[in-house]
Image: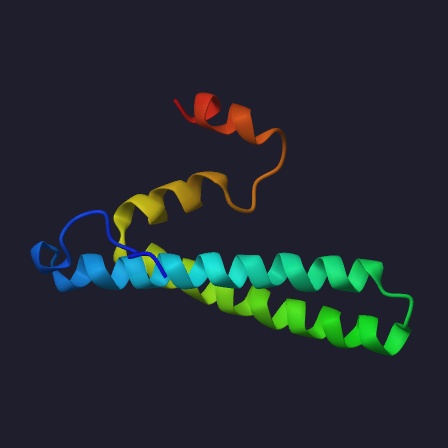
Length: 99
């Protein structure tokens, strides 16, 4: 596996390394969500579909928990999430409307 770091790890503070761990974990959760979602959409076996949907939803829970951890740690995530999450209308117009 290629390094998760683009800078020498010994130069990075612990908090930055933890953020990288969380982001890498979120990537893995999102990939798992995609895989389970595709498999559930493809199978004709209802029992298998139900299991795959259950597994997908567990991965969604994990990804959401990581997002919340990042939001709590990084004010930039908090600000953007407060701007865009749980809104209505075209997302590309929200930033302009708030200006």
